[in-house]
Image (cartoon, rainbow, N blue to C red; front, side, top):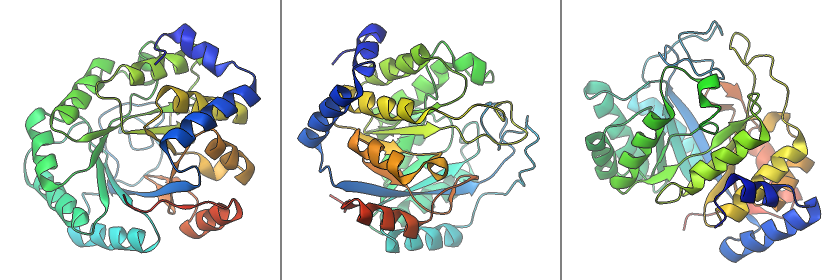
Amino acid sequence: MPSTVSEISQIYHQPLPDLLFEAQRVHRAHHDPRAVQLCTLSNIKTGLCPENCGYCSQSVHHKSGLAAQELSSLDAVMAEAQAAKAAGSTRFCMGAAWREIKDGPQFERVLEMVRSVSALGMEVCCTLGMLKPHQAERLKQAGLTAYNHNLDTGPGYYPQVVTTRAYQDRLETIRAVSAAGISVCCGGILGMGESLTDRFELLEALGSLDPIPESIPINCLVPVAGTPLADSAPVEPLDLVRMIATTRILLPVAMVRLSAGRLQMSEELQALCFLAGANSIFTGPKLLTTPNPEHSHDLKMLEKLGMQPKMTQ
């Protein structure tokens, strides 16, 4: 696959009809073009995170007004997972606002959540911050399908967004996840003031991971008052479409997930993103702390497009 920034730039800057045609050709070779996987993301622990990620309402460094909440109970998480499954989600993701997961009672509770959600027959994903190899092994044994740890942006721009940890810290957690045999969910965020080159460097970094991520969330920043990126300009719609199409061409087998920011997107833009190779969405009232379209709205949108939720394999 093309791996340099200049090669990625050439793909991205093709005339849009050519770019979408190539993305569709690749997409159809590896995926059902009418199927979209529905995922649900549950916030199992809110706020007081010691990291200073510029986009995040959950950082202790920012005055977003978010009320902190302790780790959810197993019963509360299972009620959410069962409701998500009933609404058509086949993947249930649990996110906790930690810099890193620490061994102890809270980790044991998360392991029990993973075992219980896995028993429902759903794919199970967690995003719990940085992991050590032995913790990744325990999550794997509990039945974890995937671990989300986004690179956020290219390595050159990353220090403009986060200074409490290094890009290398992200890569080490991803390596630990891969070594444990858990599939990697890893993507980025558009609209944080980064350049096109920074976006291409993100794709270059994703393409250099071994193995390649099974899942690539493409997020559009949802600006939150009280965070350093609160006044960021929205992502240009066709820039998002081009980014999705380029990701699909570079990483043909991955699930490309149209993630945060969908509430600000028209159905027409989302349809273009599906044509560009996106084949998964997060559905439900919230994505961690930001609003998100409801299940019923998403099902109606897919019906209009002649598409349907992807069933488990």
